[in-house]
Image (tube, rainbow, N blue to C red; front, top):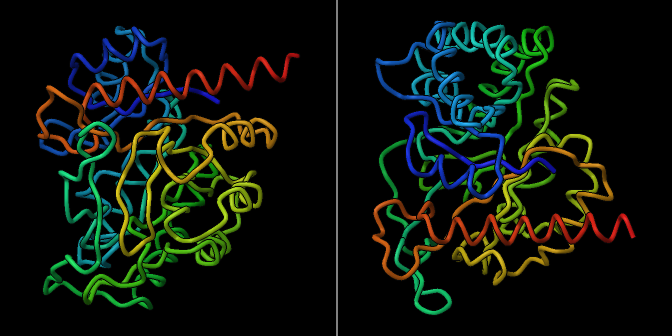
Amino acid sequence: MILTDYLLCDKSIQWDYARQLGIEHAVIRLPEDDRFDVTDPGHWRTIRDRFLSAGLRPIIVEPMPNALHGPIKTGGPERDACLDKVIRMFPIMAELGIDTICTNFMAHIGWLRTASDIPERGGALVTGFRLADYQPTDLAISESELWANLDTFLQVVMPAAERYGIRIALHPDDPPLPRLGQVSRILVSLANIRRALALYPSDCLGVTFCQATYSAMGEDIVQAATELAKKIFFIHFRDIRGTKTDFHETFHDNGQTDMARMVALYDRLGCDVPVRVDHVPTMAGETDQTPGYATIGRLFAIGYLKGLIDGVACQREG
């Protein structure tokens, strides 16, 4: 497994923490403003070089920039122009050694929580979702529209992705519910993930295996990981307690998943892919300004994951 951290493109203390923890690879969130043109190689090189100068090599883009992906998911009038820009990203990414895009197909509503101050162990605060507390909006899209839009996306971009060796890693919907008000969701079960992958069979189309989301689906995540092993391009290492209609995040050692077993499983399956921790608690002394992405919980989670990876390596080597 290749340990990474999720980092914004403006240098911050999080970059220093990553290097101090021994992380050498970055999952990068591209700027979402006019400073950055996804079709300008110079803009990409500036960001790549900024990371390299800090001792970090960017290898994954997460997510697809929302300004591009929003119209693609909804089928909006800008879709064709956005698809063209996505394709024009690929040769730039290939030249710079950034070979994977973690993307989702959640239209209108991204990953969603109804609370960000749920007490976890020792009073740490975590995010959570309760369907009973969700207030629907006026936004709407049907299941059939989403499947058609996903098919269009894949049919248009995958030939170019194959040409340049760019891997598209589909992230499941979070929470994995078939509807939120009038907004349908489609990547909500292992069966639907299979259906999505079958739309365009390719070595360049796979999944981001977000452990907690597959757990929230009610899937056997050991079975799911085993089935999808050759399609796992990226792993989100996180855990929850609860079900898709009512759950909360946890410390990485305090959820409903046997995390040590999962790390050992990835090793046995040959999943030597990038992994990052996700959705961490806000701990004592921290402000809750960025729920799920506070610093101390993130440091704990990375250390915990490093320990599990090292433990598996020791067992393998005898």
